[in-house]
Amino acid sequence: MSKPQHMLVVGGGIGGLAAALALAKQGVRVTLLEQADQIGEIGAGIQLGPNAFAALDALGVGENARKRAVFTDELIMMDAVDASVVGRFAVGEAFRQRFGGPYAVIHRADIHTSILEGVQQSNLITFQTSTKVVKIEQDAHGVTATDQNGQTYTADAMVAADGVRSVARETFFGDAPRVSGHVVYRAVVPVADMPADLRVNAPVVWAGPNCHLVHYPLRGATEYNLVVTFHSRHEEEWSVTDGSKEEVLSYFQGIHPRPRQLLECPKSWRRWATADRHPIPRWTTGRVTLLGDAAHGMLQYLAQGACMAIEDAVTLGEALKACDMDVESAFQLYEESRIPRTARVVLSAREMGRLYHAQGVERLVRNQLWEGRTPERFYDALEWLYGWRAEKSLAQPRQTDALVV
Image 1 (cartoon, rainbow, N blue to C red):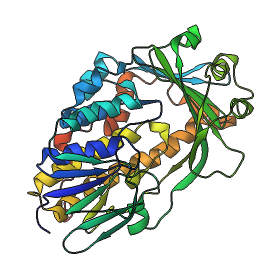
Image 2: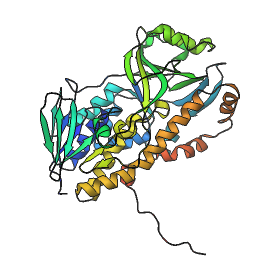
Image 3: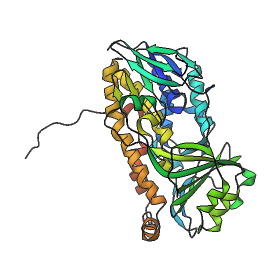
Image 4: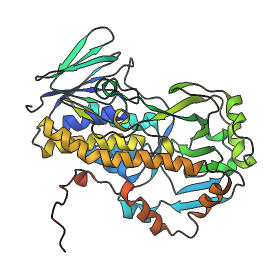
């Protein structure tokens, strides 16, 4: 496979923009195909760990994100049943020194804009909006995407960052998303509508039986992001719709009044029936590879979905550089570097969801897990996640020496 002069990126979300920017930094011309009529992002807040800032810095847009982010003081978990503290850990200077970056929260649109600003400075990236890719074909010479109107786009290779319902994933791997049965309601509320005793500069998780609530500040603490999650009584399909306050209230019986008051704050909600992806052993078929949710859609319990997509993009660029722009070798190195890490995050997020939603004796066990744990032990436990660096992102050869006895 020859060195790519031109690549397609399918999807203009956070992962797709990051991928386009990473490819352009390697001198590749990129056509980005986005199904919406404009490049933009919807949603509410997301959390950014030090690994996300390391990836953003590698793309040259870290400062763009920093100027829009809220840097938090702590990470806090509370018991939603009795309002007791389960665990709280500082993420200030000692945390930054350990991991080389901050912990922050940011509106999804603001992190998208921060990457978009970098993309717009490149003369190698062009956009095609209102372009929903419905078919992908490839041969020995290139890859072709066909949109809903029959228009075709051809390039040397493709990065599919087209989300949980990825056309590329369906075309080349054929597996379906795993609908979790967990429903997420999200809203952004003005600070004036936020209970005064909960205006905390931290992501706060209120862990309850088969449910939890999260809140944290956005946009200079002028707004608060509010997320509530519950196990649905009904069979769900992956979807995003308007939410119902009555439905939310029905799932939070038996919750302490302090967190329960949050349910009265939003004027409107958006409802996500969530899904993730079972990890698979390869993401690439020929000239097409997956990135972001298309490769490793995950539940929200580790707050790493966007972070992993940005890491993917940086690693893909590093792989192309390391392989002297040979696409076949680079895609293989990219997979080897990313699949074990992202699979660990997918599986860990599922387990974290179980901890959040523990009840009965499991709740009591969860509430003891962090008792007496020092910040250093907390940092050690998260080194695998937050210690990622672009310069160490590529997989190293496995040791094959025979055992010495």
